[in-house]
Image (cartoon, rainbow, N blue to C red):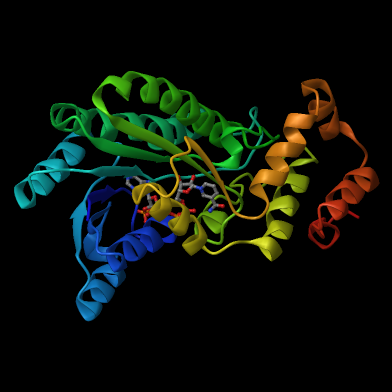
Length: 290
Ligand code: NAP
């Protein structure tokens, strides 16, 4: 049985992970920005008598993180696992997205992970045990057009996690990264492009890619299972690609030169559609201009 803190539990992967870990007898401190507006997890926990404690935590606010961790340490004397899950996404071109979108995305996805990690590290280091699980993405390894803020933030999470894993070796603290492919959560709808008029016609390809990927979406429970395996030490791998499309797409990218990958963004529409169809993605119906 481990004491586990998870960020971003109001929906999606955080929600599913909190439930699965609690069903497996772990004590879960499920945090979210606004518990009073997201009572579903609390209701399920109460009905099923699951060991889930809901706490407010905003990963962009250091005081909020410190308060949440202080509350956890009031309930228990040991934090075994921190799962940095909270995240946001945006689609759009570098030119047209406002700088605030880049800052907000880095602040939430990357700096939020750093903030939470820094607050639990002294505790874990003194105990000489602990595990930090960072929810990255296939997008942290494979970079695609119109996804620059998200990919940059997840690439930063990847680099940070690898550095941290080395620093933690002398203290017996494990670090693991989870790399889900496209997963069926509210994130997909939240990260539709807010740009109404664009000078970049291929932005539509990016939107069509995510829409077509919905047919292959995995439920967030699949990601929660991967996280459970890491918590239970059934996986001791540092990187954990998750979902049926993750390993093949990571393998495909690794097999290509950088130049060929980048040039792929410049192919004509029919060639691009054909490439997508080979990946079983029916993008044609989402392209309005053909
Ligand atoms: P989701 O359902 O939208 O969940 C995101 C969670 O993060 C929500 O609980 C959201 O809370 C929370 N959050 C956002 N900003 C926050 C902040 N400042 N402080 C605290 N919590 C905040 O999406 P999801 O797919 O489960 O995303 C979870 C993680 O998986 C993210 O890191 C995401 O990048 C990663 N991921 C997702 C996919 C995918 O296809 N869905 C693929 C790869 C990786 P609110 O309700 O308050 O907004």
